Image 1 (spheres, rainbow, N blue to C red):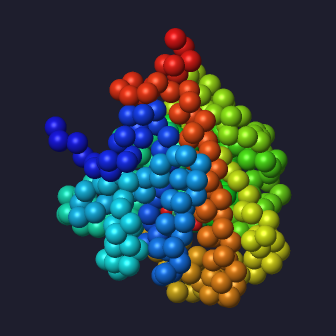
Image 2 (cartoon, protein in one colour):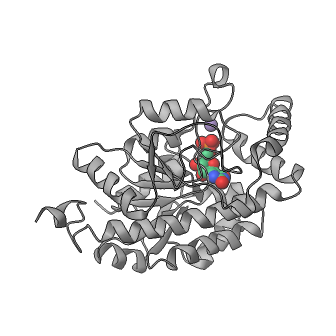
Length: 318
Ligand code: PSU
Ligand code: MN
C-alpha cells in the first residue's frame, strides 16, 4: 500500500540518523494566530528547534496529502490560505479523501507524527476540557490523542480558556504523565502559575528522557506531557488575564459560537481585548516550547538506534 504521508528529505534523513526530530502543529498557524505573526512565529519555532541541533517537522495536509516537514513556502501558504480546515482525529480521513487543505491540531499532528516514528512534539497549549463541559460535553480530541500516541509533547499547559483542573483529571484518567518542567505546578498558558500542583517534575532534558523511556519500556503507550511555563518577561499574571477570559467566554456564549470555532474565537477575542499582550505571551511560549522540545529530542535520540530500528530501547538494551 502506498504510504499515506510525505516526509521531507531533511526529516527522513534525521529520522534515519537517530531521530533528532521535533514535530510541530499547524492549527496554531492557520487558526490560532493572526497574520503576519502566524508566519513569523511558525518560522521562529523552526529556528528554535534548529538551534538545539534537532530538525523541525511542521505538519499539515496539503491538497489531501499529510506532509511532515513543510517547506517555508508551504508554511506561508497554510498561514495565508483562508480555506484551510481545522483537522482533528475525526475529520482527518475526510480531508484527505477530498484532497483539501488542512491545518493539524495537536491531536491530528500527534497521529501523523507517530505514523513516521517521531518521538517529540511541541505546541503552545493543548486542548482539553472546556468550561461548562458538563453541559456542552466539549472535550478536545487532543486528550484522546495524548492517551493514544507515545510522544513527548511539550506545551505551556492547557489553554487558559479551559477548565484546567478538569483537564488535569482527564489526563490522569488517560494515564498521561504530566511533568512540570522546572515547576511544581501546572502552568496556565499566558500565566506561569495556575495554583494546581503537579506530582511530577523534571529540571533537564535528560530527566524527561529517563521518565519517558521507562514509561514506554514498561509498555505504557501514551504521550508524556511536559509543561513549561511561559518565559517570565512575557507572562500575564492569572488575575490580570482572568477578566479578558471571562469576557471572551461570555461573548462566545452570547454569539452562540460552538464546536471547532470556540478555541480560535476565544484566542482572537482575548488578543484583541488585551491589546496584543496575550499574543506576545502566546508567541513567546511557542518559541520556548519548541526549543525545549529540541533539547529533549537530541537527548532522546542519543538513546535510540540509528536507521531502521527506531525502537526507543534497542541501543540501551544491547
Ligand atoms: N495552542 C495555541 N493556539 C492554538 C492551539 C493550541 O497556542 O490555536 C490549537 C491546537 O492546535 C489545539 C487546538 O490542538 O487549538 C485545540 O482545539 P479544540 O479545542 O477545538 O480541540
Ligand atoms: Mn472542541
